[in-house]
Image 1 (cartoon, rainbow, N blue to C red):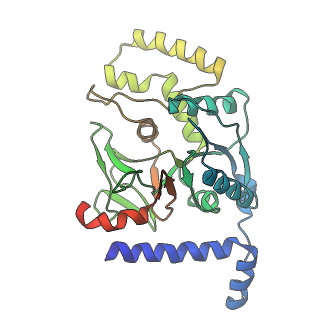
Image 2 (image 1 turned 45 degrees about the vertical axis):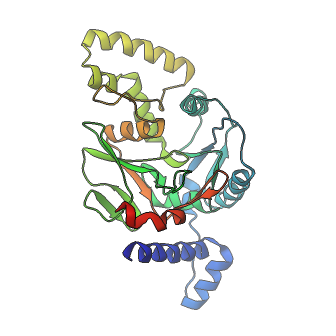
Length: 305
């Protein structure tokens, strides 16, 4: 019952935020309250967001429509630009290839928003995510399966042990309204990069982590001599290409199996001291034959708890 009540409260809050985002809505609410309500112009001077869409086969028309509406709406509040869409069967190669030109060309940006080619979302999603002002912010979307399940996990940074999060009300999580993160410093939330906002300083540090071979040192206990050669080779390659291999498949710290590319990024960000948050109120659709959303998971909650 409490989950459904929280969900209803979040919907009401989001609808109110949409009213305040819209000039006509602000005017109506302002008149009712007897106030002069201003827009969030402060975002325009601070946020420069690169919107990156990797794709393997094709872009779903509904995603393209959602992206167009989001870009047009967001331009009222921040500077936003799109990069050419690239495709490959190995998604983390594409992510790195799309980020690399921004670094190689020394482009000015404060955030990157990742959108997969099979997502649908509200036009205000970027503005809402920017307002949260988090280092890494994922959203509450679900797997394309029956039953669908939230694509959010909590991962132990010492062992790589992972567990899916299906109940926001547990002792492992810290809360800020609809936002959640791992409470322990030795754990992190991980979320799908199908819709994720990342600050540039996080990308800078995670890229340096690759150059320094910090994860490999932790995993394999490399000597200073071994690290010296790896670091020299990586720095030369990264400086030349602009590709700092932010995304990859990390080998689990136990030395067996791998983490997915989105989980790997979140783990590296957390190891670098950044918090990974998820906004549970942002619930985009994940398109297959059917656009799965968090609402489809609600009937399954009792069995998951």
